[in-house]
Length: 240
Ligand code: IPE
Ligand code: IPE
Ligand code: MG
Image 1 (cartoon, rainbow, N blue to C red):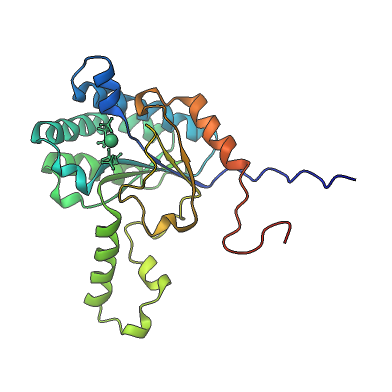
Image 2 (image 1 turned 45 degrees about the horizontal axis):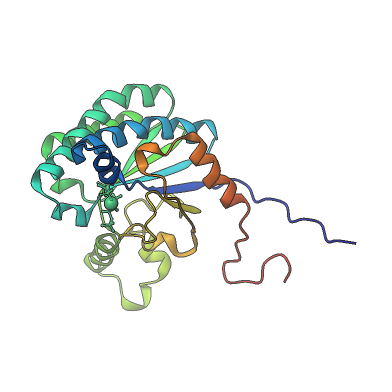
């Protein structure tokens, strides 16, 4: 008799997305790169709704890396403006839908107005119990680990007290569980300094679809790929 088919695994608790391909999306249409960023920023709303409808508790979106500062100043400034506008435009609606907004990265280097908009959205939504939407903006995985080590040293922690758990507790959002699934749009196969610590046992899913075209059906494909995977965490898994 054939062994029973393995039952599909439950949906992920935390999905993290590297939203890539805005520039290519615009270039393919003969448009300026910032137009791709504008449409890409608008796409965030429908993707947040899709994850909320699927009752996935945590969604992290990589929107600006510590390395993205090396782009031309007009593009960096345009990205800041688009994000600020999106936060101001969407915050009330997200609040009504019970979304809780969080941020990971270095807020203090951003323009003051953008900092203010992000801080306001975080404090307005902090008691919400729906989807936690974590925005990685001016985020770098290496900076995050360095910041955690510095925080430990400042506390005068002894070397033998520097454990994986102690370090984890000093990351930007220690209460948010590690991502189960990391999605990257636009086809690249790299992390680009995203969630280096937290990604240790995440499942990866890369799609050639560019971020502005990544809609609810693409989310379903990524979730289906995830539920079909077998995770072993270094052990032997079901057959073992
Ligand atoms: C992702 O799109 C958004 C950011 C990195 C800010 P890109 O701007 O990287 O788009 P491509 O990779 O050039 O197509
Ligand atoms: C990664 O995309 C960062 C974000 C999506 C915010 P990049 O386009 O910056 O990554 P690389 O340069 O292709 O690695
Ligand atoms: Mg890119």
